[in-house]
Every structure is written in C-alpha cells, then in structure tokens.
Image (cartoon, rainbow, N blue to C red; front, side, top):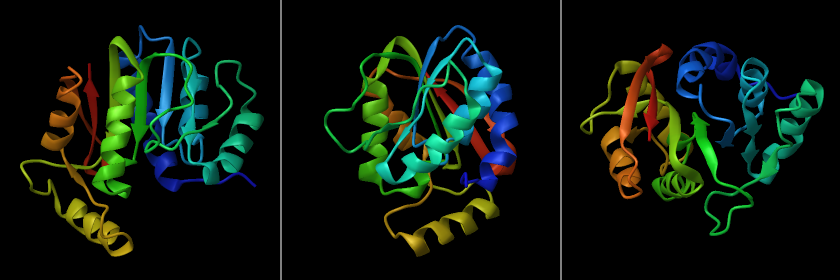
Length: 195
C-alpha cells in the first residue's frame, strides 16, 4: 500500500503554482528528501518537460517506488537512495534545479547544512534551488503556528527545528547562490528560490 503524507496533499497544488513559473526553462530536477514520492508524481504529471529525479534515504525507497511504478511517467525517474551526509552523491549529472519540501526543519543543522551544500553542488551554473517549508526570520517565529510546530519538532528530536532564513541564505551564499524569489505559501510556509 502506497504511503500518503497528508501535508503533501494540502500543499502540492500551491507548490505547483509557484514552480510552474520558476521551472519554466528547466529540463532536469533533483528532488531531495522526497519522502513518500508524492510530490515527484504530482509535479512530473503537470510539467512533462521536466525530467524529475526523486531521492531519499533507503527506508523511504519502497514507498516511493510504489508511487513511481503506479504513475508510469516517462519523465519521472526511478527513485534513488541518497543520504545527504555522504561525501559522494549517486547523481551522474548537474541539474537545472534542485527542489526540497518540508525537509530541513525535521533534521538537525548538520544534516540540513549537508543537504544545502550538496544541493548547491548538484546545480548547473545558473540553476535554481527551491526550498519549501517554514522558516524563522531574525531568530523569531513568524507566527504562533510555527512556534507550536517547532515545539513539537524539538520534542521528537531536540536537534531539529525551524531554521532561520538568514542561516540558509548565508550557507548558500558561499556557493554564489542568492535569494531570487520568496513566495508566501499556505500554513505560514515559504517557497525560497535561490539562483
């Protein structure tokens, strides 16, 4: 039985609305932390010009492959195992875009930093890095919902939690990536687009 993430069902259309413009000129996308694989199927169905590569830890692959097999999309690649903390990623090319949704707040900073660093290295010159999720600004929560969510995250894993936009910007700036677009999304989330 395919795994289903309710959050993905709620946010996939708003994400597609933003990515439709952002990825208009892209042809290849590496998705990091694909989880169930739902985003990849939903977006590959809508954007047939994109070759979409889902990836995640080994434990996620069986569920992702169920979504991939059912979808039968020629532009959706078979999901690959990718641990962002490993030095050598199993990707054979540079991508026009890297996309990740609801990932970096679920992990500690060392994993989030590895995801950002590796994602930046996987981009072609001029490529875009799209990051969806909740963020703090200036070290402060942007709403009570995010404060409560962060409390829940830290209760399950003290190293995890909502990251500051400024920290993400500083990390990606070291790879000459700057914040090009910022989109307000449902449930106090943002889509940050770096290029």
